[in-house]
Image (tube, rainbow, N blue to C red; front, side, top):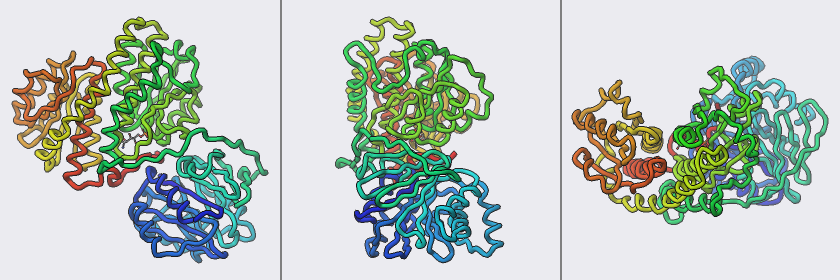
Length: 607
Ligand code: M6R
């Protein structure tokens, strides 16, 4: 799960590679490196830590050349240190590779190569690639790469440079993403479009077992063991999006505060007068009208959005909706129906588990509809229908604004399906749209409580454990609140359906345990009140998320955060906001790296 980039051309090589790596760092950021060929000689530099560490290292180096490759890593095999960072080089340091993927048979290959005298320096699976190329390298680098590909099992996108072939990059893929960018007298390779879109909008998507021979003046494509092939060149229609912190201390805080604007944008893009429309949906209404079951696939925060969607879709569109964690989906023998639609939800559009699910679904002839934020991502391209979640670039690893954007789009989608299926009248849809239009103002009102939430964070930041409870569509909110806290502050937090407390987790409660209780005034309010009292009876500390004007709850709350009095269907969009801020302020107080927490990556591209 890493990002790779490569460049052949006259621009400043170091800068093209570093910009590319920075833009790829959502795929991993525990170490990085580059290699270049200058006057026939290979040089490479690599270091543990974020891309800025590589930048620092390169400040005192003289990176020259017109051919180079780069890598940003999320460790799978071997800890994130300099030796395990990429590029990996052969014994005599004349061939260098960068690799994204996992070589599943690396142990067997490594033993064989060691027996032949090859010396391994790293604990990575990737190092076998460079030794195999070295082993097969006689006259032709291309031939050595092809023979290496035949030996490899698992997934890969890798790029090679070698002193014996100093003017070109050879890049190939199987299972991991790889694109080629075409420029004027310059060419690029990358794990995604985003890394090279500042330089070119002409893109070739590589298919499995494609090989690209990338020279300055041309790129030749061939299939493994086959002849030269023609590939379609795609013109990318959007511009490079860049995100800066806009005066905020962290991207995460900026993204939390962008939420009102994100919701306004989505509404103005998808609601035209009385009509809901999704630009670029690519799926006909006939498919949606016929649907009798949605099977939602997603991971992490996107899975929580799927859980909320189930409440809405089943209630209003009356379509049976199942929600699977993508990594578990393949372990059940799903019964398929002809009118089922598989729905993938993914911010990045690159999550390997979700991608594997949609591929499996398509192989079984399901239609796939995806909610994706990153345009041009693999899930975007491989789905039959796509709804862009339209939250703009999300940089913080902890998903915030895109979660809210997913919920808003899923709410609109529910209304859209309900109209198609006549399960809601036009008047009911209009009333629900009017309610939705109030959400940006509601979120602004919640954000105004930031000082108060910061004070609550100050009170509890030393606790090592938190519980989050909610009911109905605020049960997924409890899961999301707990996930936000644990991923950025490293505090153990668990989300529970409040009714489940008495079936086990209540044993955890003592006077040290903070319990975040999500209790807006809605159909589950009375039951939540009982659960809050159960927590209080055992001396747990209650941080209650309650509706403005609800005074009854004050007696049972150690701390209160208010949300506006919104329709029940919209509470999940609102209750998550104070929990994002609570997690943020606790993590800041603990001096954690909020935007790039340890061990994580923005996009999880390994299964
Ligand atoms: O890009 P995706 O939405 O497919 O990513 C899914 C999860 O990896 C992601 O939501 C993850 O849980 C976030 N770090 C949560 O903040």
